[in-house]
Amino acid sequence: MHGRRSIVASAAAVGEMRERVHLTIDFGSLEDYMKKGGLSLTSIKCPEYSAPLRLPKVGTEVVCQHCSNTVYAQDVLEKIKELIG
Image (cartoon, rainbow, N blue to C red; front, side, top):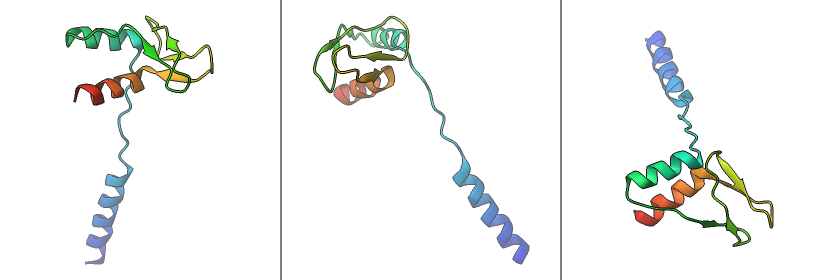
């Protein structure tokens, strides 16, 4: 009986240790994804300074030239998902 409890506890511990899969999206992939859905993203603003940011064709981040805030493609994707539901 004691051995069985030990196995159940170990299985629960293994379940807690599972890692989440982390995907990285770049701005080129984001643009392709949006075009497939009929959307077009032409510009974004820095969330800190509200200055317009140039969208790079490649890379996972863009840095605001005014305040040095970094905006990540993944964050832009999440905001778009919020806006379109």
